[in-house]
Length: 391
Image 1: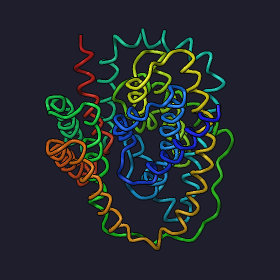
Image 2 (image 1 turned 90 degrees about the vertical axis):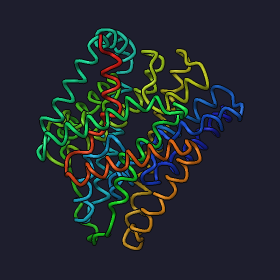
Image 3 (image 1 turned 180 degrees about the horizontal axis):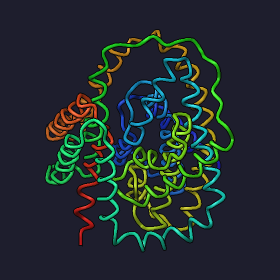
């Protein structure tokens, strides 16, 4: 038991570290496969360690995603309302709303756990044959709802999808492919466009949300997170935009927090429930140890425990983070992170990975300059998935 707690703490520290680095996608945890495998850790401690990394990373990642303008896939749509709240002196409240949604989703999943364990495998067996239909419908909804340019949105989806289809032909370890892809599409492409730091107002009046709005946002967000966990390739940002029933910024931030955290937990549970890992963390677990019912209970227990700690840590870090934001040159910080990502890409994926990073960055910059929603770039996963599930 003591060993498990030690590895939970170690995973928590590492997850917080990953989460605070803007532009570094959470799926880069797959880079730890050779390192972790060489440590010969006991299976239970290994599970606790990896789950702690994944859950803490997901919570803390709200800070750079929402406040630094470097959102990870799934948090793109949260950037605008969070940025507006930050400039008006309510950046802490923006993070607090997302964390509230995340904690609420954890509590709801605990309450619904027996139903989830019994119902998800059955629902998945029904939905799976029609996965491609659901994905095509979601793509249609995303493109159709684009206000700037539907044609550019469709083109961007096709271009990202083509990268996804062809990426398997590159001589790169499949476990590492997502690092240059997501870093280019959603990380470097955004960081390169950071040119100035706007003035942040002093702490404004604390924002309050009614209990009814909070409950509705958590309920629909959690349901959306579970739904997105069953559909491969669908980002939580798209699901959050559909699940947000109260059309205001505060409710949306709660919803996206609930969607993100419930999706992260379900992606781990899916290893046992539907025998299909849904995230980089889940892939890492399946490659390093066998997951049965007892292991799934451990995953759930550690996930809930770490979620509570991570929520508190995230709020504490946010207060200090906002306090020093005006003193940091974010242009230089962004350039440093870009250099770091390029170096890691070459180190782990070679020149082919660098080519992939440059290509994805160019597409990401094009989408940013076009003003269309960046979530359309999730076509890099959605299109190959549609092709895979076609009868």
